[in-house]
Length: 302
Image (cartoon, rainbow, N blue to C red):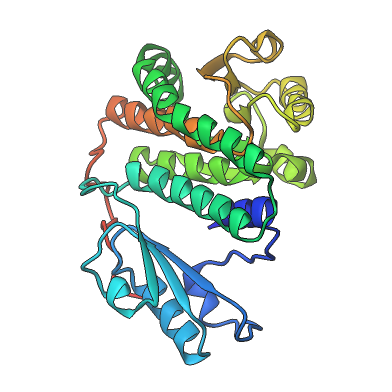
């Protein structure tokens, strides 16, 4: 949802708010007939998201849902749906459905920009050509498991981890932290890089690794500042970097590389090494990767 907000505002210039479904229904949002409510759900049966849908309906707001189950309650009750087409996802921790959600929201935003004549046709075509290259880049990242396993060996003995990202990769930091704590039971928190020095930096020590998402782009230099802050406090750094970024490598204890891509599309690639890292760390800790304790694939209760 946070990435959808960024994409819609960046490409379509439509003011967008992102909210937890569980909070949306209780905060009595200010919305008029021109507002569209977008629901995102893998199962289409999540209790909190359905409650948010019903709250939107009570305010006579149209609902568009991004779903991976076209036979779900949300599919029946939404005004329009977009099929994520990720196929059945059996494991509790969402991976391919997350990727499908991000890609679908990106393409939806790009299509909105065409309808509203925001981006020139040539620019949209250039972006679409880059989108077509993403699957090949994903394959490349997925094959690079040897380095991920090395980092997982280091991470498995720790009890706390911090994830940092900015702009498009702040949501990625939250995703990386969520996956790690869901399946490896290591406490992990994601933060916006710019907020790091306003409190979370107090947690940095030799015993708390910091995963920093540092792709090439507009925020690259700012993220290097975060790396230097961690390094100065003797923190251990795991960086997610663009291939060949020697400057960041020199500041990092470990690094995982992704192919070069635009900042807006980079979350599709940065999520994968973090998901793999959570997977291998969980394996090395003897955790059940597919059925983590206390979790269910579809949370149907509020």
